[in-house]
Length: 308
Image 1: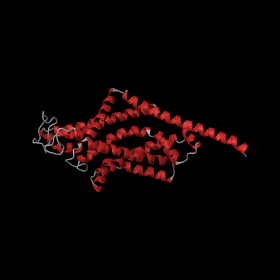
Image 2: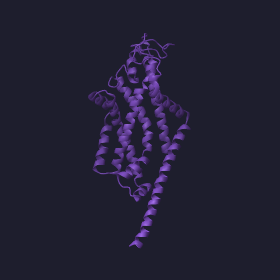
Image 3: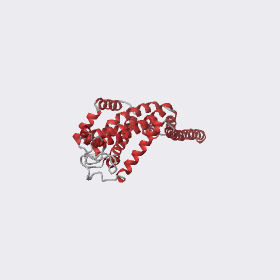
Image 4: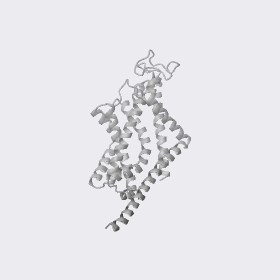
């Protein structure tokens, strides 16, 4: 028995060793690919570089914006409806708030909500898409039909209904935006997992003893996340638009908290009488932010499609 078992054990160990080397090689290839993707973005077109610059600026403003404002963002100044001047670069609004200060501070709310909602939808959609594709059957079909149902509704109208029904807190806004975006990631990851589940590295993982959920989470999901990360940048900009849109109609972040949508809404009536600065500057800031993330997202998607 010992003589017969010895060679078999040696062969099994050799197979396990080869499988482990294959998995390690796959991890190295994936890391190198991510580095190449990032370098490709940095070497992209002028438009991509401008978009990346906008992304960096607004991320920094989200972190440091409230600390570098020249005026208190929630305290009125002595000037009301004053146009752009030396003392107030972007002018003041009907309440006497300094618009420049509020534009600098607004990314703290808008960008934070968009980041958290996007990450939440990415994680939820990826996990659900993974399970729906890796463990197919009635449950997977039910998930896909539920996804179809959510996408059948006008998303912004659905967001308004849910926010008004459950409250206007930051947590509710984040959860609503995340849930609206989950079907996008669910379908992306599901399609990618279906193409990966029969690849060689999955067979190598099975040879090392991994089974079921372990293979799905450790080996398949990390390789399926590239299109999800590419979509995240675009979803981020869309999340900012929804956040601002909810505030614009009074269903989102409420004044005097500095937020682009509510600032645009507060100044929309003044445009008719020539007080354009109240809405134009917040609108430009929001447009630049959304543009930056959309351009970077498109660049990431182009790189991914070109290399797959």
